[in-house]
Length: 87
Image 1 (cartoon, one colour):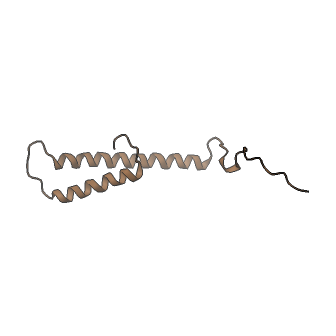
Image 2: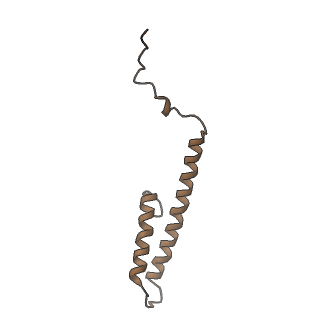
Image 3: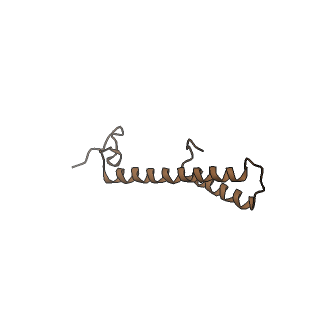
């Protein structure tokens, strides 16, 4: 006996949404952890920007190193959350 072919409009079994599966919960947890890391990187980048451009016009020691750290932090945010509001 031949099996009937599934119509193309039916959703495949893996795309059917079920409420609160362990995988969805893990995905949400991962998303929130990544979001916290990116927010921390943004706050660290803001501190470095303040160090690079002090209000009292004092000399900056190791400006090139600070710029490198700043660039790495911003790159991490770009990779982790390219559409971040703080970015």
